[in-house]
Length: 490
Image (tube, rainbow, N blue to C red; front, top):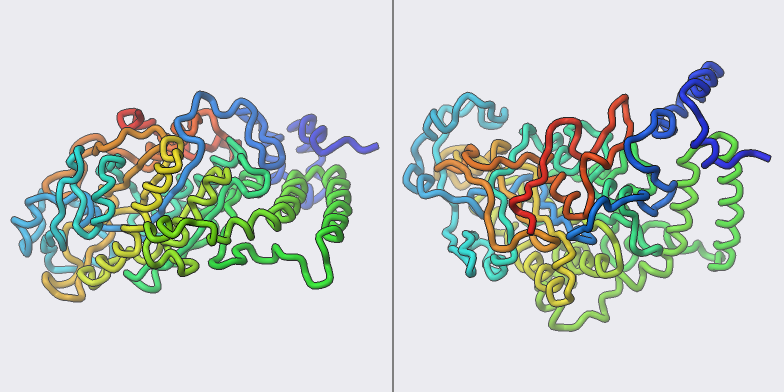
């Protein structure tokens, strides 16, 4: 009788593996699949499914779940959350050399003969009891300012979209690393056996259209078991492809087929010691259970009219940001661990005076609505909401000053994200930029620090959640220094 795959993974040693690898290229290919078992780990073993790690959370969590509202392509922190009087005072004049320094800019503006300062395109105001400044481009968000923690000192080394968005979502500028949601799924598992732990929704905004492409690797599991990758939902009543049974196949027949297929897959897994075989079994079983759970989830006819009105007119348009915010709330209340919305269209290199207001109208009311909705349902206190992007925008104009076609270029030296709920302090701002919102002068927060803080809110010590990969104990926060931003955690 063959040992089980679990026994094989437990007793396969480095010496026996290297010895066996002499038998052919196929065994060498298996090395990447068995890397965790061969090399050992500094953390407890993950079940080869979707159940999370033994001993995780490491301490009492502030948040049970995460809603990440990712504003793809870099919204302008200057126009929305971090204006300075100097931007108005120096409008049309070149950004002072003492501010611009010698740090690089992108190839899109490096050849400009001048770098004229551009003021925010609209005024704003200090909102709520906290007095947080929010642009008049987002009047609905102004009403919930006291729920927000605005971090104004985010920074990244990445200066172009693909490495920057990959860095923000996986902790590394290179593809192939596990995403935030996959780490959460790996560590904590799912609270609902009938839905994946990590679900992703994508929408296109009315700013830059089409926006920069969104790749599924941004919610990939990388070197983690594939059962922890994000599941992308499509718009409409059939959000998951191939979930329905084919014509002529009823549920009982599908159940019998899956049972037989699981037996064959387990026999194969026991034979070759491939943990991905069990991940495949788990994926088939999850799909079977989702046949019942997803149709009910996608049918919003049970929502109160006043709730739908709160999300705005686009909520009835499948695939819109508003519809995805509502669906995100429905997923969270059904126990999904990590829900991430990607909203494209923030790449305002040109026509920022036209594009940015349009893009803000897409997100302002639905974002505010999902915060209010979670709070009304008693869920905001243990749901971490993240309004993030990959970098900010320059204080100077891309293109001629005052030209209707001009915009703002990429800017990674400082940008803004905000957090709410899930153990985060309310109505505060953290970090400070200079008089031109161009450099950080107080309390810098790197992307790694943000990741460490997200995991901390979930009860996870980022230093302890590791997986051996390419000779390193890899974690979401990479191998470089990272810290929990304790000043923003309540």
